[in-house]
Length: 152
Image (cartoon, rainbow, N blue to C red; front, top):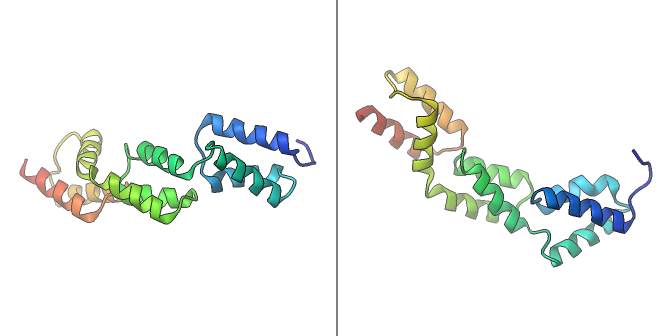
C-alpha cells in the first residue's frame, strides 16, 4: 500500500472504477475515497464534478437500492438502510412509501417461501410476526397477513 495520496487523475480513476461496479451514494463514495484524496477539498471537487457529469447520483442509487432491498424487506427496513447509506431522509421516505404499496403481497410471498404450512398455534403466529417485523414490515400488514392465514 502506498503512503502518499492519489493525484487528481488517479483519484478520479479510482472513483470511476468503484462506480463501474455499482451505484454509490455520495456519502458512501466519499467515505471510500477519503483515505486516498490529497485533501477534503480535492475530494469534494471530484464528487461535485462526478455529480455534474451525472456519473454520481444519490437519487439513482436510492432507487436501485430500494428495488434491490424490496425483494426481501419491508418499507421500514428500506428507509433505514437508505438513510444509513447517506441518502437524504426525504428521498428515503419517498422511496420507502412507494415500496409500501406492495408490502402486503411481498410479505405474503416471503412468508410462503419461509413457512410452507399455516401457523397452527399462537406461538407459531408470534414467531412469524417477529420474523416479518425483523424484515421491516409494519404491524398492520403483519396483523392482516397472519389473521388471513388463520382462516385459510
